Length: 272
Image (cartoon, rainbow, N blue to C red):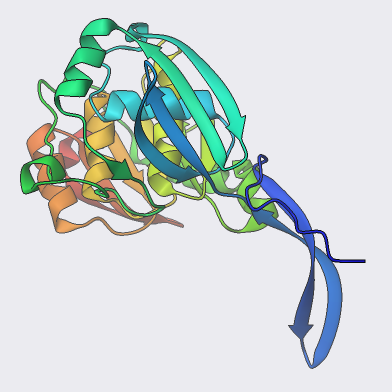
C-alpha cells in the first residue's frame, strides 16, 4: 500500500511522533512531543491584513493583543467579535472591528508576513519599521526586587507546553508580590507577549509587570509600552534600541534575569 501523507498543517498546539534517539552509543525508538506552528491570518472586516506563524492556542487572546500592539485598535471595546476558522492551509482569525478603526487600517494597510522571532517583517519604510507609541500612559507602579526573583523561581513550572516540547517561549503576568497570575506560550516570543497582553486586556487591570523567557527587543518594549505596563523583565539581553525606547517611554527594562541576579537597563527608580 502507498504511504498516506499526513496533512502539512496541524491544528493543535503540539503533536506526538516516533523518533530515533542516539545516546551513549545506543539507538532507541521513542515517542516525542513537538510544538506546532501554523500560519494564522489576521482578517479585519473581511480584509486580510497579516499572516503570522504561531502556535494554535489562545488565538482569541493573540488576535486582541496583536491588534492593540499594532495600533489597529485603541481599546478592546473596538473589537466586536472574533471567529476562529480552521482551513487546510492554516487558521483565519476573522475579526469585526469598529468602522473608524477599519477605515484607518485601510489608509495604512500594508502587506506583512510574520515569521517567528522577527518583529519588523513586511515594513515598507524606515518610518513604518520604527514606530514609537503615541500618548503612552505607563502605570506608576513600584516593585520590590524580591518580586522579580520570586517570579523567576516559579515561572518554569508554569510553562506546560515548554516542558512537553522544549520549543516555546512564554510571557508571564506577575503580581507586585511576585506571584505569576497568567502565562501564555508560543513558538514566537512576540506572539507569546501578544497573547498575554490580549488576555490581560480582557480582564480587570491589576498592577504588575511582564516577565518573558526571551531577549528584550525593541518591539517587545514597544508592545508593553502601548499596553501601559510599567516593567518588562527578560531572562536574556536587551538590544541597545530596546534600552533607548524604554528610556523614552518610561518603561523599566530588566535583562539577564536569572537565578539570583538581574541587570536594570532603564528606569531603575521603579525597583526598590
